[in-house]
Length: 537
Image 1 (spheres, one colour):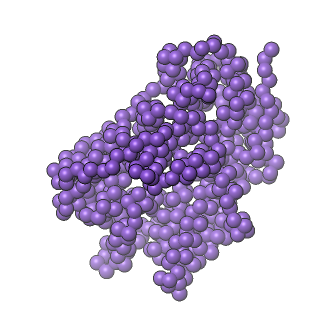
Image 2 (image 1 turned 120 degrees about the vertical axis):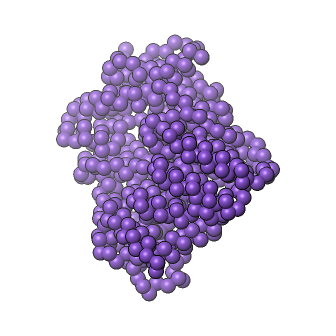
Image 3 (image 1 turned 60 degrees about the horizontal axis):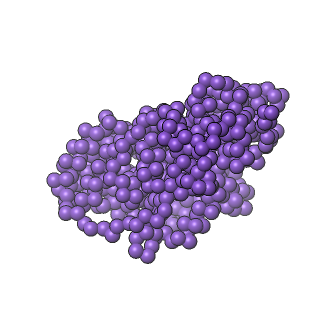
């Protein structure tokens, strides 16, 4: 007898976006919501932004208030990130609140009263939260850059100050902060800031320029490469810089290779002898299955002496490489607490499996025209991967490979495979959410109509869901017991998604459609208008 789909009403919409430490975005949202203070909940985002910008405009606020200003900016950034994640997951109230906050920024920019340091802080804050602050703020920075070309420019001093301040930061922090600040700036402004770094022998400035080589803008890459070459002419470079350039070459698309190759050749001739570094001892590697938004966490714990180093990667089914970072001086207790707080089903995997999963994600990034962050360079380096090469493979081919290499011990029917995955709740966040799916369900009143529309949308996205199954099966097959055998269930379901048989015959697809319809209905009853925009990177 055919097994009926269990009816479940999600307590929260699945969230889309990326999180630090490779944390599942859905879990990240729950943690962020739990950590919100009463004060934050009291004021709207628009009110907070209005108050923050007013403080930036206060000429009586002296240097003594600088620390408080940056602390408040960090709090604002955390709230923006929280709201952006919720909005991308289909939370229409969060969408409305974010639009109102952006309107406040637009209004402030259009007054023409924002000083240069305020503009840079706003770009930094919104860049860290991965939210485009809008064209009005871009027009302000362009006006400042135009005036910076005059001999008496105060803006030019701001550029110099920005470069000088990098020396006070850790390389990792400097690179990520700079990348966030220029993320949504217009091209002319981005070029000016990167050009200002050229020739500096500071290691932090060089680290920032290295990160710029990963940008999708070929002109910005050229400016950064010239800046690194000029830096090498002024002072010898560490050999580690050349090694990182080799890693970067593997991460960037082929059209960028000539520029990176020329930079490697120029810096290699000016490189200092290699400096011996204490090797890292691998303790364990773990990974998660894909969540509904396509996020998959890959984590490596290593030991250096008495302390631990953590390398984390976040990859996504539809966009490839998403985020990565390295945490030094990490204790085993910290690692255990972090993995517990993530709330994910994490399974042991081999370093080779992590490298292959990253190679598959890299090929997707190249096909989508997206680039890796500098965190990938540091994390790959920590894991001992000297170069990463993209592996382009279709979901169907990967599934065929997995099943051919290790045939299922017991033949599985489609219903058996779907039922086991639903029972284990490994696919509890697998459903559609966001403006695209909402557009299919908006205006439909009957539960059957909504579920039918959701199923039709899943049918259109069957290649994506086949990839979800393939990537999850790849991880579980490598992990062994106790969850390892479940890779077969993912593989069987994945083959069905990759085939031509209607997804309506797939029990898991029916459950996903039910969740999609229920989540959409919960938003409708809350009285929120349809969301029309995604805030993903």
